[in-house]
Image 1: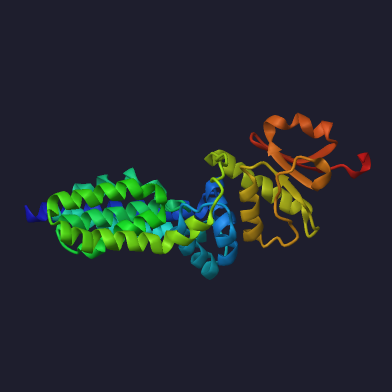
Image 2: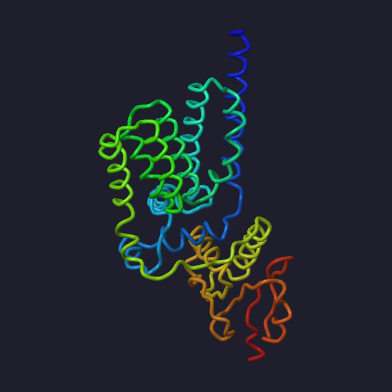
Length: 314
């Protein structure tokens, strides 16, 4: 019986290690998505003063701070912006393992992780929020460390504000089992509120405009957009250029501008007026507009077209 238990533990650990290795590869190889590029372009690339002066709310405050540190250490790349998520993936694995040991369900370690795992290879606060929430649940099962449970719940909200409701549910569940109001308020509720406010009070009180709604790219579109920008990089060379892009592509263009250190690229804009840009990146469904605008197509695939102005026709 002991041999079976030991074999189960080894299998579970091997599965976890394999899943984590796959996610490390995905974090390094997958093209950047529009939502990931948006977080970088609006809240990580600018200085702290510029972020606080921004009118847009940041829903991933804790992750933005960690991502800023990551790109400061390792430069801008898809892997560096996703590195904090991978580290929280390790924390998530640890919490799953502890829960599995505590509840005598080693199979949970092999079966539960993939349910949320995709969020640990993306550059947003979802993975951090999930990992911190699960840590709070694990500590609650241990029936101790109320202060740490509150801190984990507060950090989960700071990682992504949409986790306020799940964090509240976990906190109330702890109260239902603890049944000591005074301890719960002093050691869980107050730490949770204080920790969340430390990260959120300045960014949220300075933001006064509604959040931007930017269309998200599919995985295939993200890959095609990366190829389109590679073609643009080769074509433009060292020339100083102005780029026009759709709202979904604009932050991605700005992200790769930072990764390639293309100082000759001006930040992408959204103006549709042909005279304002040297190159245009637009959906392939609008390719017919290139001829009407006297544009020369330099790249085209199933999703995107890159074209530049025909100066001879002007």
